[in-house]
Structures are given as C-alpha cells and as structure tokens.
Length: 279
Image 1: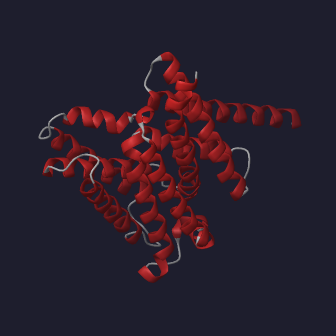
Image 2: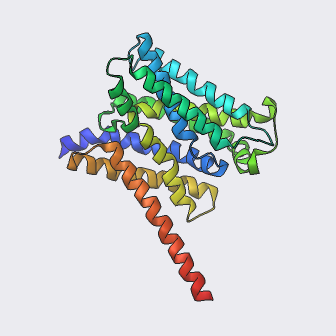
C-alpha cells in the first residue's frame, strides 16, 4: 500500500499543479474564443522537440527544450501581433492552419527520426505515471513564478480577454498584455506536453473551465473550480489507469471530457424543463 502511494505521488502532484495553471489559461481561452489554440500550441511544442531530436540532441536536454521554447513562443507572438480590430480571417482558421502545418511537419520528421512514430504517440497520450520528482519540482517552481507574474498583471490580461473581438490595440505597446499572456502560456505548454501529452493538456485546459463556467460567472470562482475539477478528474483517472492497467492520459481525458458533456446536457435539460414549467 505504501509503495503504491509512493509510486503514484509524483503523477498525482504533477496533475494537481498542472490543473491549477491550465485551469487559469483555460478560462481565458474560452473567454477569448480561441478554443483550439492550446492543441495547436501543444503540437508546435512537440514539433520543436522533434527538430531537436533530428539535430542529435537528447530528448530531455536543455537544447531540445530551448528549441521547443523558440518555436512555440515565436508562433504565439506572431498570433498575438496579427490580431487586429477587423480580421477578415477568423482566429480559429489561423489556429487551424498553424496546427495542420505543425502536425504535417511532425509526421514528415518522424520518418527521419529513429522511433519517430513512437515519439508522436507519446506526445499525444503522454505518460504521467512515470514523471519524476525532479520534473515535478521543476514544474512547481516554474508554474509558481508564472502564476506570480500573471497575478501581478491579472487585471490587464483579464481586460484584454473580456474585450469583445479583442478590439482596442494594434501596436505592440497596446498589445503587451496579450504578449505576456501568450509567452507565459507557451512556456507552460512546453513543460506540460512532454509529460502529459497533447490530449491531456487540451482537456485540462478546456473541460474544467467549461464545467465551472456552467455554474458561475464569477471570474475567481471559475478559476478555483477549474483547478478543483481538473485535479479531481486527474486523480481519479490516474487511480483507474493504475488499478485497471490502462493508459493514464486517455483515462483522464475520457473522465473529464465525459463529465463536461454529461453536465452540459443535464444543465440544458433542467433549463428546458424549468422554462416549460414557467409557461
């Protein structure tokens, strides 16, 4: 029993920490209406890692991480700068193009890297059960510093998220809250995807925020409940994956995704019945 707890402690703590920071970004992403930017950024981060591997660096090396940082942050900066008051091309279309390019290049590089197909599978599903204490500590410190920065500038970032269609600013001097948001978001994604995988990062960003948003419009409550929901779903998924000997990432994805859909349908059903009773 004690051995099991000791083995599961790092992945559980890793998920709790990630659920907090991803829950924060998830609420901003939903409010901004750029739902698929997270999965696109996650794929770009994975592409950066593959380029580092192709050059000859080790997967966990600092050089690979720096290349991944560079690709991710560059794309996010470009995305924040090309957004104007009147956009002829929808934001989701731009995000979709970024994602397709990153995925297509990753598939091409996989043909040139030994074990490339296995690496792509790992970036999609992750392997949270085997996260180390060193990795947990690294992410804890990094996310804590990121959280402090976001807290200091929270009003500016929130104001940009709440502005309809992101009006109000086409110059870099006016867009710095967006730049700060996207750069820190890229740093977080680069550090979560190698451990948790693209799908798990996506679901931790979106599903908890969706569920929280169904019950409260209060900004602080949405972020807190997103953290609680994401952490609870992750812990349950890790427990089930360990006891049933199934993949951990997909287990958490199914739990949180299914929960979001069920709660959304129940909320809609209850609202319709309430409306009928009033009539």
